[in-house]
Amino acid sequence: MSKKIEISESELNEISEKTGVDPDILKSWYKEFLKVSPSGRMNKKNFYKFYKMLRGNTENLHKITDYVFSCFDIDSNGYLDFSEFIIAYSSTSNNDCRKRLEFVFMFYDNDKDGIINDRDFLKVIEAMYEFKGRSKKEYPPVKCVQDIFRRIDENGDRRLSKDEFIEGCMSNKHILDLISPFEM
Image (cartoon, rainbow, N blue to C red; front, side, top):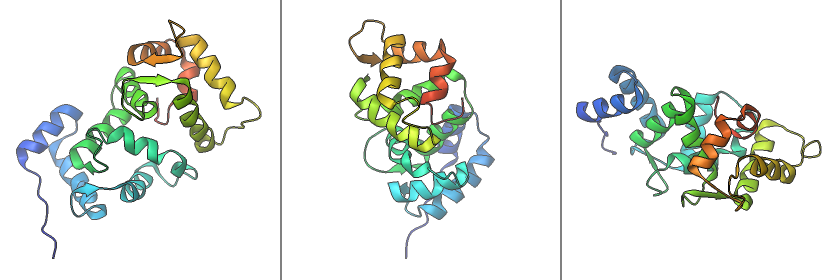
């Protein structure tokens, strides 16, 4: 018999401060989270089910869920606790553009070294093309990555820092629409 995992009022209040979500709403989200992950730790398989439920039955969602999971898994332990999940999810859904772009950066910075190189960017862009149903023939992912780096890689080193990435995306709405898995 599994022990029921509780969340304290202080944890709820801390998460509420970080997300702007009312503690009562967080309680109901937590109950849903526990339905999918009774241990209070969500693995990739359960994340996919839960994220699909939240996003709606998006046909190609499976193409990007590994990247989204990695982005949300702040401590890189292979699991999401409720705090990691809800802070990341609310930041990608509700906050200002800069905050969402921080998560988009993490989406592409899969190894979490604070830099996105053009090879890593290409892998994720290819998954984004599949997710969004874009034609690879019309605008090949390699060309897309080259164009993006040409526009926002300020020093031409084929590596994007978080600041280069965020500033470049904020100054070019077209790039933002191409690369973001989240509603912007």
